[in-house]
Every structure is written in C-alpha cells, then in structure tokens.
Length: 334
Image (cartoon, rainbow, N blue to C red):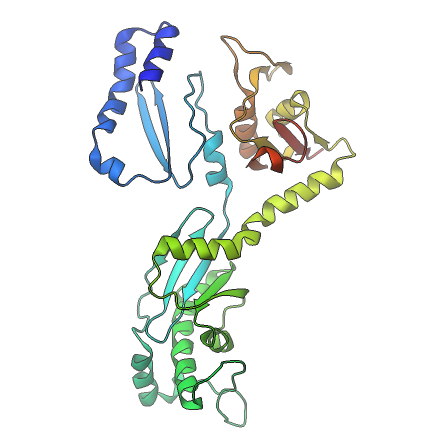
C-alpha cells in the first residue's frame, strides 16, 4: 500500500484521490477474519472508485503494477484450467467423494449414501434385488485378486459397494465424463471396480487406508497421480507448436504474435511467467511500438486477454517450459 502511494504521487495524482483509492486497502489490512481465511495467493485491483480482490488458490509472483489497465496474467492459469476429476475414498466403514481440480479439492456431500457396510447388508437381507448376480446361471459374483477374506465377506463388501456406486451414478456420474480415482485398501479396489457402472475409472489408484486423511494431504497424493491428466492440454499444445515450428503458423516474435492476438489469428499462446513486454499497439492502423514510456502498456498481458476473447488457448509457463526462446510464442490459425 505504501509502495502504491509513492507510485501514485510520482504520477502526480492528487493526494485526495490517492487517499480515496487506498482507504479500502488499509481497511482490509485491519480485517482479521479476512486474513485468517486467506488462500495461497491474493490479487487486488484498485482504481478510482473501484476496489476488488480475488483470493487465489495458487501464489503468484509478488508484483505491484501501476498502469492504465489492470494486470491479469497471474489469473490466467486459474481461468483457463477447466480440468477436474473425482476422488472416491472407499472403505467398509464409509465411502467419501471429493471433487478436485488443479488447485484444490472439496468434499462432495451425497444424499442417501450409506454410513457403513452393515447398513447395506441389512437392506440387502430385506431386498434381494440389491445383490448383483455375476452370470446367467445364478451364481454369485466372482472376484479376482482380492487377497484374503472369506467369500461371504467379499460378497457383502460387493453388495455395499454396488449400493454406493448406484447412488453415485444416479446423482453424479450419469452426466460426467471426467476421471474417477479410487483410494482405499488394496484388496478393496478390485471389488469396487467389479461393480462400478461408471466408464472412466482411472487405471491407477491410491492404495492404503485414506479414510482419515486430512483433505489437503489426500489431495496432494491424488494430484501427484493425476498430474499427467492435467498436463494433457499443455502437452498437446506444445506438440502442435513443435509440429508447425518450421512453418509460418508459429512464431516467437512479439512483432508477429501481438498483432496476431489482437486480430484473432492466435489459436494457442504461450507466455513466460512474470514477464512483461512494454509498448503500444494501434489496432486500427496495425502499428506496433515496443518501448517503455508514459503511454506504454503491458502488451504481453493484452495478448493473453485478446487470445481468450477470440477463443484461443492460453498457457502461462516457467521459462524452461516455453516452446521457444523469449517471453512469448504462438500458434496461428492462419
């Protein structure tokens, strides 16, 4: 806040206007409840008559920008990432469902989900239709690779898991197409797989007892397994760039990429984290000037915004992940 006050003063903004803009920020500093519920990162946007903040699930590079437009690049990965998955913790005591994305995970309360295996066993004794028959001859379900335990117990577990799966399918998974990751003691995993109607169960699983894991710790384990899933769009985009790198459909020159973004030519754009390209672009006359100065703006930030507005894919990457040298690169539509 003090840094901003100095920068505003250097731009010869009146003292009264500076105080008016920064007062909400100083008030927020005194809000203990706000800071007690802080996320990993925070973005604050201040202008005359305007004060907004966004709690971010990831910590951005710490920067203070004082320009004519808001700096939004650190928000792009959160906005652009649409991938998510479900995690189902299975046990004989209780099954719990979570929904996770690239930044965190939340518990999903599911109505009518049974409290434990014995509750379903009692139901199944009254209603034979809850028991799954494995073949037309009327024999019991045949499970493979489940470790120890007697057949009756395995049948009871299967009945319980089938009941859980039916409820989850009716309430959630009948309209989903994202991965479902299973977490549980090793011998329970194949039992659940054998009765599961959902088509997109991950081949990998989290083995072990996870029913008492703290949510964040469980998420970190699940995210490690699911990392290749989250990287699929980026890997595909990098492959497209590599395949087109010898053609005019790719470029890492700001002189080509920035105008291309403004005119809707960019299908995929890659920018380096916490980098800036200062200058001006006259969109009407297609005149680009790369230079710092009073009228300069962050053209890299604007290129990201324009690409999003025209339906392109955006990626904010560490330097070593960039597909080419420099702070910006793109794949063109034409």
